[in-house]
Amino acid sequence: MLKLKSSVVTKTHIGHGTYLFDNLLSETLFIPVDIKSLFDLLQQGVLDRIALQNAVFSEVDCTDEEALLVVENTIDSLSNKGLLEH
Image 1 (cartoon, rainbow, N blue to C red):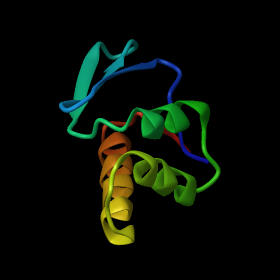
Image 2 (tube, rainbow, N blue to C red):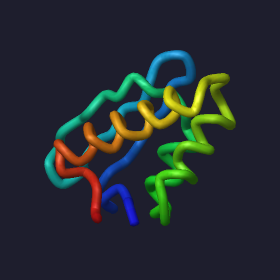
Image 3 (cartoon, rainbow, N blue to C red):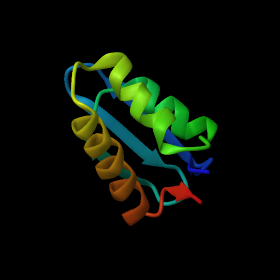
């Protein structure tokens, strides 16, 4: 299961991207992905990456490979900053 830490607050700006603020670290991370449903799933905790990929499909017209890249790059960025619970 992948889940954003409870100390993380997200703010998505359509056409721009998403800001993630960690209340504990007082640090902001910007991700150039404006798919709100993707971050909603990460806040709820998801069981698999296919659900995340489907969230990308629901808002963006793209290929399977492109959706998977969005998911993988987002997860990598969040993991590198320590914002995900595994």
